[in-house]
Amino acid sequence: MRISWIMILLAIILAAPAVQAQNDPAPKLYRWTDKDGKEHYTDSLPAEAVDAARAELNKASGSTVSKVERAMTDDERAQKAREAEAAAAAAKIEADRLQNDRTLLSSYSSESELQKTYSDRLILVEESVKSAQVGINSQRGSLASLLAHATDRELAGQAVDARTLENLGDAHRQLGEQKIVLQRREAERNALQNELDDLLARYRELKANPPVEPGGSTP
Image (cartoon, rainbow, N blue to C red; front, side, top):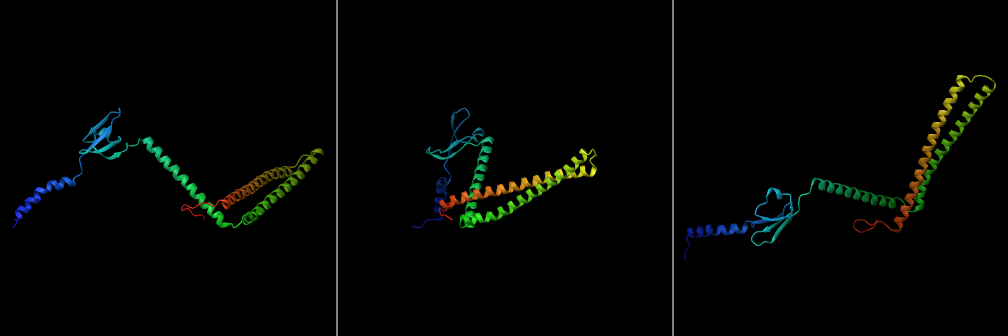
């Protein structure tokens, strides 16, 4: 039996709506709650519900297709941004700490090697402290000598000359400057010693409990 092309074409045309119905998404029903707490079911989403939390339902079966959380307020978005920024900062601190621990362990094979490295630097700083102290003592001697000279002239009933007064002012100023230098050198020495103490404590901790890499291995 021969089937004409007209019959085939007619069958295709009649079947097209059914195929289209299968391909088209199922009609949706929206379930949302207004600002007063009242629940609504609507075929379309009204403007007032665009930012509200809602569920999208299959209109035919009533089953939930998807859920949409409510839009965040400006304050909530700002808070979330701050939390993300804080989390990123904490992650960076942790990454830096792990990297510093790796560097510390790989740079020194023993405590004595670490101490020797800092010992050389501490010696140099200590020498600068001693040098500053020597300069202060010398300046104090010069100042004492000038003061004694000025006192002798006053006791002799003589006026202190302008040159002596000028030298006294210069000596006093230089003594103050050298004291500031000494304070700086002592601060450098103390900071370096504290750094060494902290590193030694951390080095001992790492030797006893090596850091764990993200993959679960130790360096």
